[in-house]
Image (cartoon, rainbow, N blue to C red; front, side):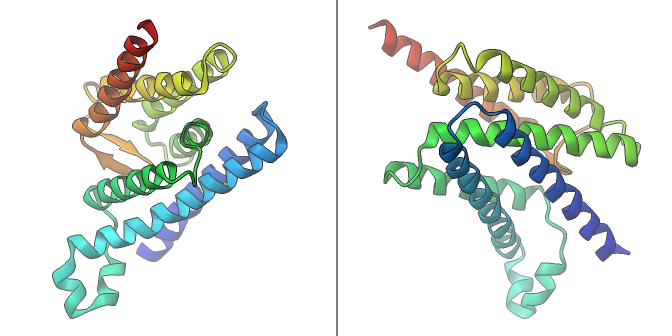
Length: 215
């Protein structure tokens, strides 16, 4: 039963991201070749994230891993493993961006579009199929930020668009955390400081860019 539940969870997440990729490919106004490259980069990043989640579980349960390596894989991934996977993923993306292997802003814009679309569908499935009332807030926030994306994509440069979306999503999640017992990202419970860190990052970078442009 536990294995079936896990497979179902991964199936819903995979389906949601697949739908997000398809939505990005058909709704993005970028050239076809650029869209293909960005979709490839997003898929690679998602696969790396799964690998980093496994690494995170090993690091957290290293004592068990030494005694029985396969037993660690049976452990459910918790918030700590999720945080480590996010940290490792960001570090890898920054590294690839620094050495010109990845156009970071273009990737970020594509990823946010896919992430928001996947989040909306995932939470909709949780709400309708599993009657999870806590999914409604996540779904509304993802939907509103998606609307913001389509409204601003012709008016802002890519970097400002990414910062606006990141700040809007994290601010929405932060507000939601005061109305719910907890907040989740694809089923993983995340602390308030986690989304606050992204909001602060978006605001600080946006303010820094504005100061530079005014000089």
